[in-house]
Image (cartoon, rainbow, N blue to C red; front, top):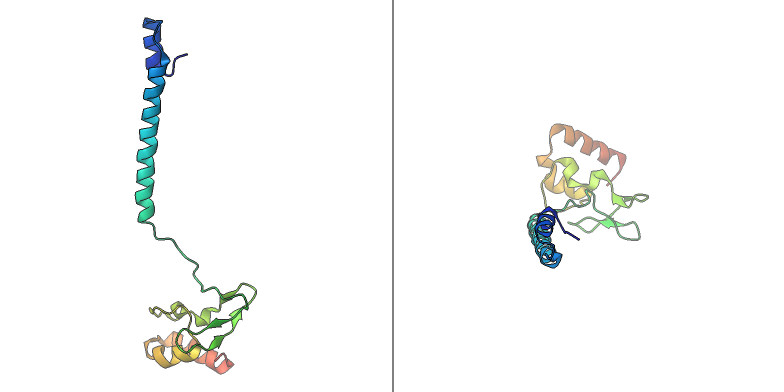
Length: 130
């Protein structure tokens, strides 16, 4: 039984043509195609930067801690993530910490906040979120 059109032509011209050679050739071509595809994917994966969860997940007891002063922070317990007000990115801050209490934000970064953010920060303080 012929493997492909080329093999069928050879078999038609020569009835003693064995498809074993064609199968081997076909297998080698498929293998090289697969190997090159795998190499391409591997290169893409090595350059991949996976997106992690935007919010810091809390431990099993639904607690999180400020990364500066180690104070306990209340969390959105049903979703087990920190509240937005404890995320420095909400305030437009570029820092390595993912979780900060409002006290540390006020102490270290208050001068960097924009007027609109300062107003919101003062509102949180007035509500007693510290």
